Length: 179
Ligand code: SF4
Picture (tube, rainbow, N blue to C red):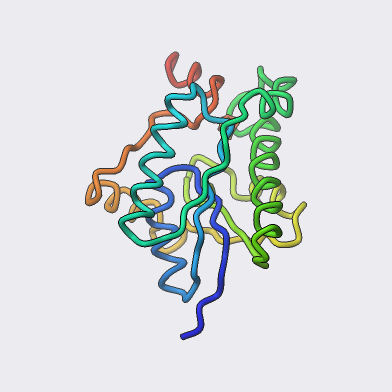
């Protein structure tokens, strides 16, 4: 079977696990791209990055990490800091990260990319599609289908992956601490 290259923007190890499984089963040859300057604090970024890197290493998947630039990410979303999760702030956040993925896809001479963010039932798929549609190389893959989220829980147990309790940014951290 000929394998098709694809860049997989990855938010964390659990979402990467089931998304990678689906891509590999359908004949893709993915490269994982960890670009998540939204994650706060930096120690949390390092923790999620480390688990994702380890998973890729054990599955022989190429892994690339984008340096953490939280200040630049804040420039893109800070004016919507009071918005709740799932609002326009998240659309801006998706657009920021997927924009980096589009640039990386082009620089690697790949033709397409997608994102593990689509695996989470906590993320709006239409919002992700709206953010992704700004980039010609984005392909929509709804990893939630075929029980993707449940499979990520199984794989997280199997590989002892770290599963975070909040989405990523300081705003979502505060909201999860107060609920
Ligand atoms: S809640 Fe999640 S998706 Fe929304 S802005 Fe924060 S990190 Fe991004």
